[in-house]
Image (tube, rainbow, N blue to C red; front, side, top):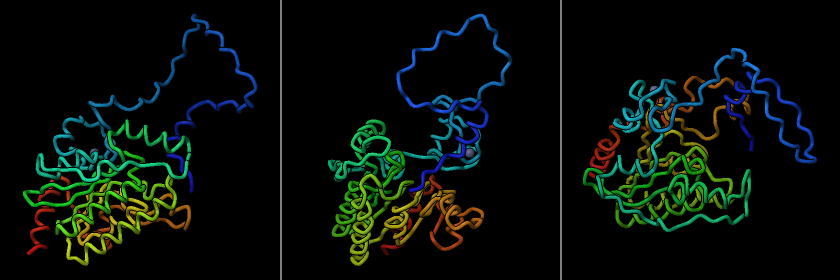
Length: 313
Ligand SMILES: [Zn+2]
């Protein structure tokens, strides 16, 4: 897989003096002597600010302005200046979407394992533990049942903060069980995708087969007459976009979400063609018939309720 360098890294290093070439590590070098305190510092250009303090202000990815976080939170984590839809965690999403206190989690006890003994920068087993501690999730999907304006639904949400929301065995199994329970219970099925990672490479073929497994469960659900509303949010990419997220009877997307298979830079580098403007955004995909409707976050709950009523008539 191609390793991509974030664009920021190039511009950061451009400003710095060149770093000396690495010498092979032989012996640990003794600590450098303390600098002489007397030397006055020349006037330097201020260092670029390293973001704003976590918790109070946040820079918007849509308009690059600094936004008072509380103000955005009050409107469901949407930028008050430009309407860009920010990240929301799976738990928060459920809180926003379902009637208060109605969510009941299913299969929360499933835990990821490391069948390949995989390691990239660090062992997958360690990565899982650190991701679990950081996010409070056991894996990248939450599934269960709850009510949307008093209509019972089966609901699944993926969370892009847990290994990019990628689909490993637990995500696939939770979603499959969700669908398989929704089928006999004749529950409308809502899956909200926020997965930048696609299939989880750390689990190799076991993650790829989740695409087929979830899709097969969806086919049986569809044959039984179920209504599946897929909600694509920023980002929905890779194996998630290429399986269940694209299989909705209705596909909704949040405004300006990145939706696609491979990232735009990868495609550009592979086929060497200038990509059309707005490529892989919700708006572009609506225009090209890939999704059915763009729904702002504030309207999502009522739009889903309306679609359920309309389709169950
Ligand atoms: Zn903004």
